[in-house]
Length: 465
Image (cartoon, rainbow, N blue to C red; front, side, top):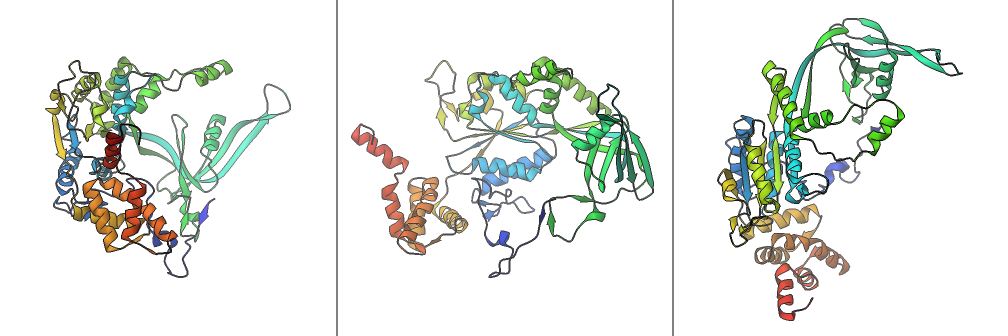
């Protein structure tokens, strides 16, 4: 069992983990939309700086999704590069919570040599639609107090022995019960790594075993452990229990698409040698939809429309856009959020290349979109972003260096200004300074070209650099 105690730093008397904030990826700092209780965006909150109008618009979209009034509709987040379009989509997913499916993809992911592009789009559509299944099952639930496999002579002969049955003792707050179980259930107990002291439940119809956690009677004095402790179950050992399971429609498609082969060696080898990516037919999906609709009508299941986020939507072609229109009009559809940094541009796959469409989307799709606009950051906002990023990278900048970088962010791009931070910190440390000065930033500008200066060099020289 992995056991972790809290280690404190002697100099600060604070936990080491909270002494410094870390940034592991481009959007790990995003914690939400940063709205108050009235839906108004705070200037600096949730990892965002500025973009108040776009954040408030996304807040309204979150409310529509939660009230289930936006299924089958689409949103387009449009704006220049480095204005937080992907961050807004991630913030929407965090506001919705972990129970709502969120499927992020890039436009180029739909093109594959193995699967049709329309089928790949529908696959991601189905990944973004959740199904919460509620079942009342007869189960045996309790803390394991005995786990004894009984051995017998192998009926096939030989020197080995085989498991004939297994005795499991379960304890609840109201009493105990000893169960005599089939050997196949013993295999399930081994897969779940069940030991004495674990809280489990066994379905009486199927024999499926689920390990809930470790009994809290075994909890130790450590502050943090890898084990999850649960209280002793109440009531009798044999009871009726409501079990809630969250799956996506794609999970159901895959489960029904795989043929149930035999247990012999040839069948197992055939399953291993099959290609990993198989195309799921529309007929199979319609059959799954019928079963899902029947479950919903019976009140057994609840449909949870999630979010499908497609970045760089201008990479999609006319065929995919046509299929997207059809998919949005289907009975079971998620909320689709598109993002584009293009203005008037040609739709990929169109016959007439002279016709330009807004954001690289056909007019019939644009007509059904709610468009959220992101604006370029002003110099004060860029200065705030650079200061926050410098704190994350443990850099100290002089006021002149911050002003120079924020000016670069306005004149060139925010990304270029942020990328100069770490090289400028290295140059200052080589020079023996603890603070990044203006001369360090200017030296970095000489060493690393931005896109405009690089283009200017190419235009003037007519050759490569």
